[in-house]
Length: 130
Image (cartoon, rainbow, N blue to C red; front, side, top):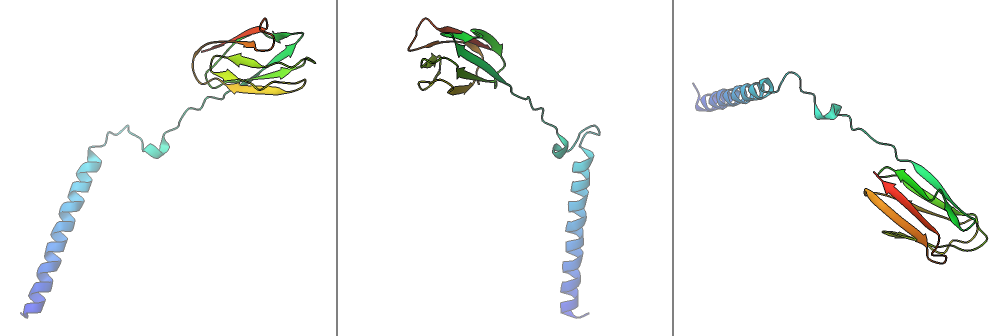
């Protein structure tokens, strides 16, 4: 036989052996996957819809003055008084709100958040976040 033919034949045999060993290893890897497992692409993530709640500022009071919400929920305050108001709370503060103006805040942490009007400190409210 020609030397070139022997070299080509040897390379083909070695390549076939490597391919056979590789495929055997792949098949063993697949066999080690539990029968009840699912591909990651099929995993469904549960999403929780957040809600927006309204608090009216009227008659120099917050209505409602207290409420309980979930983490991720948003509170929107609307000034229905002719006087300006400014919310100041644990971790949040609004601009001065004139009549008809709104301020929104999304609560991302659990806890109790007391707030008041910095212009009229007797106006107080509280948000409990679960």
